[in-house]
Amino acid sequence: MKTLVKFISYALIIMVSVLMSLSLVSCSESYSDEDRIAPTPTPTTPKDTTTHQPTPTTDPTWRWNTIVDQTVNFDDLTEVVVANNIAQLTKSNGETKLDSATLRYNFGVEVSAPTRIVTTASDTTVYTGKGKDVRSYGDFVRTANDSLRTVTTTVEGGFRTQYYTVSLTTNRTEGFSLQGGKWLAYKNVTETSAMTSLWHEPVVEVVINDSTFNREIVHNILTITLKGSGQTWYVKREKVVIVDHFIKIKEEEKPDQPEPEKVKADYWVNNLKGFISCTKVWRDDSKSWSDAYLFECEGTYEIVLANYIVKHKDNKDVETFTGVEQKSVSKATCPASSDYNGVIQVGGNFYPAAITVNSDGWDVIGYINGKVESQTHADQFANNSGIKNQNKNNNAKPSPFITTTKVENKVNGKLVIKVTAKTLTHTGVYTMADSSLK
Image (cartoon, rainbow, N blue to C red; front, side, top):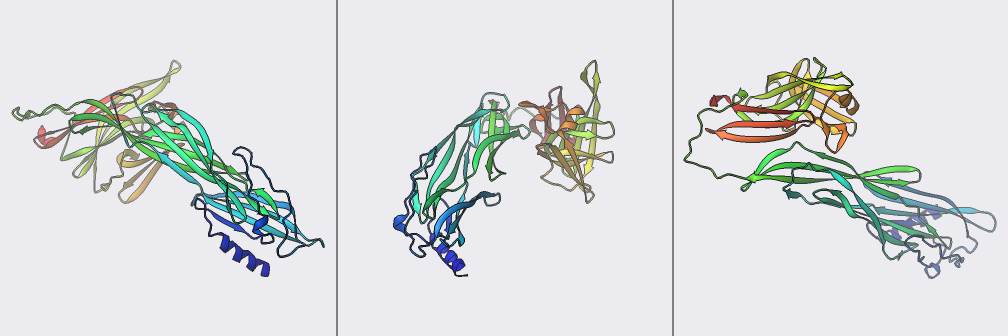
């Protein structure tokens, strides 16, 4: 019990010293501070420089014997690394006891990228490669029974696209604990980094000041893989970059020119509010994928379905257009929500839904008459069933989101919306207008 009290008291004293949010604990108190010599390892190969046996100050019969265990662990929630060194001390009469030390520090991650890029190029953003990992080392600093330094890893050249670069810097701590007069290096995590995902929200047309742009909202996902003591952990960071592709200078309004009394449209609805998305929807009734254009009105959601059948013929997939349908869903059936970004078919009917993409495919969730309806579409199933909407930078990964451009006009204060949607195999153009403009 006395040994345990000493251990706790000493641990509380040395925890006051902090290096980069660092906590240190050591239960050894058998050696004077004058006999502890800080190691001076090189950046690539740390040296165990102290081999003499310091003069004990409390119990002269205890001697350092051997290393019992070394471990390193990582807490995914707090992103804290914890390393433990456990050594065995012996007396001349054969009695033994354990001497332990703990290194605890925050694994630091800094990610930066521009928030907005303007370009005259029209190509969709793609990932072009990663730079080189470069490590730098701080000086060793003595803290109680430990000698520590910082290790900074920077990706020189960053993670690149043709329009911008995402920068990554990580910080960790390495060091030695003094146990029984010998310097013992703490185990540490090893790290590698990669851009594991780059995906785009549907492209929309925006007007800023006097210029018109096609806007990409690009999600850049970085993953740092940590390994140690036979385990693997992952630290993820996301940076969103807006890429605005310049189209034209906005034409000056001509107030003297009368607006046309009528407009041309493919579909007419009451109190049109806006366009939401164009996505792929799986049809159980035809066992095929359709393009689903989702619009919102005052009291309804309007869905335009462009239907295609894909069949294998003459050793290739042949896509055939089979027609267009318009569906209307009351907001009493599907309550208004800002989460809708797609369409789901349930029981032969179509409803607005929320789509979430993951590494293996995507999930579709609808809220219909107070009941949650969901579907999961795996990438392999989508490809095998002829979805024909792969990402341009990765043809093996299908996408539920169809690349779209939208042009909105107001006539007599009412909306007219023209939407152009383009997959790898076809282009659809449909105009929705307020019924008062007929």
